[in-house]
Image 1 (cartoon, rainbow, N blue to C red):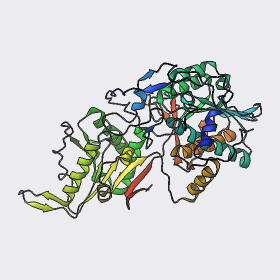
Image 2 (cartoon, helix red, strand yellow; image 1 turned 90 degrees about the vertical axis):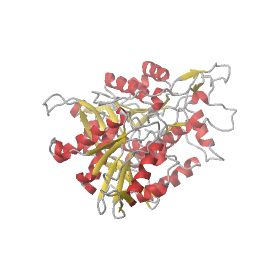
Image 3 (cartoon, rainbow, N blue to C red; image 1 turned 60 degrees about the vertical axis):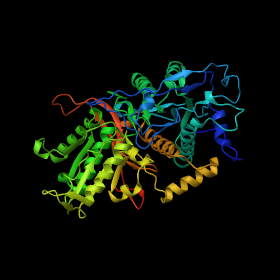
Image 4 (tube, rainbow, N blue to C red; image 1 turned 135 degrees about the horizontal axis):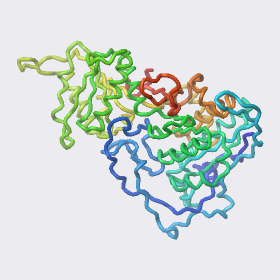
Length: 508
């Protein structure tokens, strides 16, 4: 059954989470620090840069990755350099407070087998692997290592979900918690040496896609279901029916934006806009393909209009949107671009100008006050800090997002209160993610056994941080339409948020 060390009430600050970290892990690795990230090579075609939704803070490096010219997933290309171990001594395994946690649940006994090779047990072995970075913990420091908070908040949410699963539903899970230490070497070592992983019925976790790749391959070889709560890369879990992806891919974001824009404003109003960069213009294909699917035709006549802006050393004085904006009409500009805040600001500014005034055929000013302009952007637009929010308001900016927390929702407020009462600090966004993932998949494995992923599409759910609508992603093979190989199971629900009354609000 689910059991874990009880926690005393928090005395001050973050001591409870610090004690949680102290009680989790053995660590003898050297300390690492981040070097300057390499510039990501531009890619086109099927494999575009992964999109991790609004989670733009990299907990393993302490950096924001939404601005400048680095793609959103540049945490996967970070170089690390080793610092001599004598500079800051690591936590030694002999420290009795540095032991990895394993719950003392009952031994799993097989009850029966079912469809898809699923197995039902008296209890289920679950491994949670996160970048706690316990190897960087300094017991003499006044506070815990900053970049450990992502995993600690996630773990806090998991613990709350585990208590509810057992107390309300009598679901018995044997949880083992492991620290990936932000290291592929550490993850490889765990996969090769820990019996808990070989005996697991479900593995949850990891932050970086390189570590997720390692675990996904391990899960595929050993027939273990692997739930990745954060990685949004389409490159992970290829041809792997044991891989469950919680965070929607970039393709899915583009598809949902297309669906919402068409349903709300109609196809003829839409214009795709991007800079003259292959990595950005290639994303047009996602929108065009989804548009064709919705139209039920592949004729050129139903293609969405496209506008490519010349990229001249971050000078965008050549933007001309008046050609698309007409008085008394609505224009919907979909912009699958996020790496240059300067470009987005220039584009919004020019749209505002074209909305208010343009040039007629005779070169005379023409009143555009009656024009209505709508923008659809990407999740990273929520994190820009130099844009005028009046532009967002006036131009009806929408963004896609894989998470949305309604501050006025009663369930959100209740979770916040319970989390604070238990840990003495408000929950971070990752606490909601940890709670939702553990609660949902704990129930799924209890109801449907070890191959629960084949039932995910039958059990959508509305959770605290988003909704789950899982689909099977299959590999197309010529003209075949049946019995196609499963690539992965992916959550296909994406929130569409509109900036209204100077805040983003959900509209789908």
